[in-house]
Image (cartoon, rainbow, N blue to C red; front, side, top):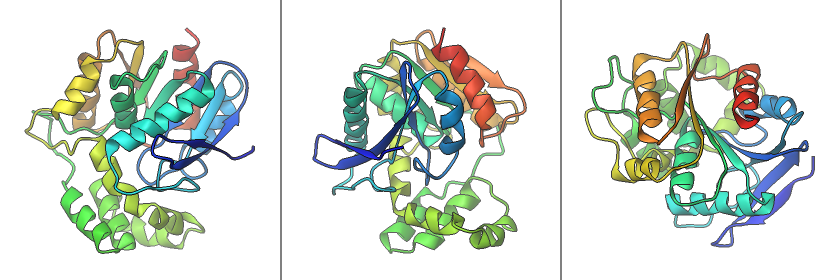
Length: 269
């Protein structure tokens, strides 16, 4: 695959690749991932049998630029540049990438369909136990240049067992890639609107959901914790006509085969 670059509105170069033929779909990564690291590389060859698949590096990651100062509007403009290059495209966002996709579609970006998987909002009255809120700690570590410590704190926040962290550190190419993107963790928190338990969804998120009027699929794993199920249900109810889909046996680490089956069914309908 050939690496291409799209120019965002502020001039930032966004690296992307295209695979397959058919209706275009842009895959939007979650925290710390990019087009060659994370779940999307396993999904691309499956999805490319039916669709023109576009993967990209969110700004600050991989081969994309990162013009300061950061604002969530810049990442929305990045997606707009990619949609323009594709001549229109559906979006599939995972985790914080799903939150970014919601923000982009709700801003008026012309996408024919929107597929989301487990945007990790912490909505009011979420069932316990809730994930620990380490956003402030992680942002302070990033500001201090302590990227490895920021990754550790993030992994604890998302429930990675402490015993697994030393193993991750010695897995070839894994920890170094996580650390390379650690400075973008605050970008993910911005996409989520810094949502917190006991508080209404941030106004920007609620407004974005209310502004979406395209076919939308909100997916959640059958093994998702109750608070995550509550978040996805809130998204499905907040977007007019959205469909909630439970994927049996799946966790937040969605298997490529399950993702492909869900997307083929939804996008080809």
